[in-house]
Length: 243
Image 1 (tube, one colour):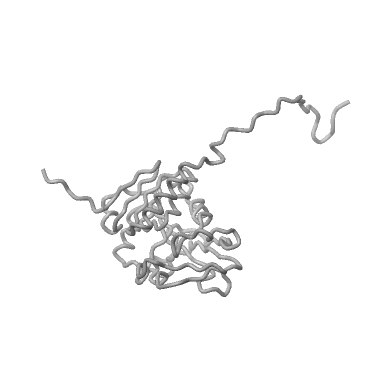
Image 2 (tube, helix red, strand yellow; image 1 turned 90 degrees about the vertical axis):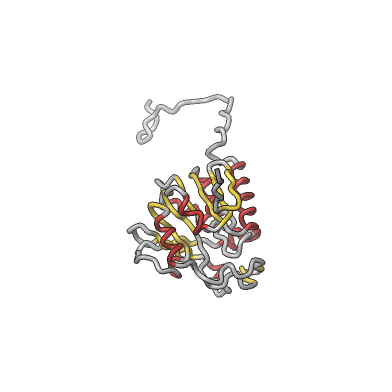
């Protein structure tokens, strides 16, 4: 019996996260439908062309050309079929159905007048109102160890997941350095990620593995109760202690 070759070059299962190394256009048709797609695909604006500046920090893109063109209509159609709803960053660059539910990330004062956009927009498939998050990753120190030219802060992806609380399985077909996966681990959601670049796939695996091994504050045991004397207040909070 001839074994059928899978379209991915590698598959990693880390906790509730399943990661595929390969072309999402070939892998997506084989996956079960997810609850939501949350992704940040190439915009086609040349972000991989050279050096970008984030305040005083410079980032040299070593994998030239990956952002030379935006994803095409066939891949967009796959994204929309892959889940019940979708949040697609850079949606203003793609041909997507009309939506009033854009999620806007205002990057704050650190990006005013810099080389990169002062805000980014995500297209959301739900019929809802536009929302804005103001978050300055430079002031927060998020980009000290930036691992991908268009890496989103974890806080921004946390914000996205907050709009889809009932989505238990999140799919990111353009995983990059794995930020969506890290956010899903924190939120205790199942995650499926796909990345075509070997180096970024390794980075995503390492970040998600670290997130899985880091206990959440909600997983920590409660602090020990003091062994000192205890008392109970039995008075009326409005009228004081009765005589």
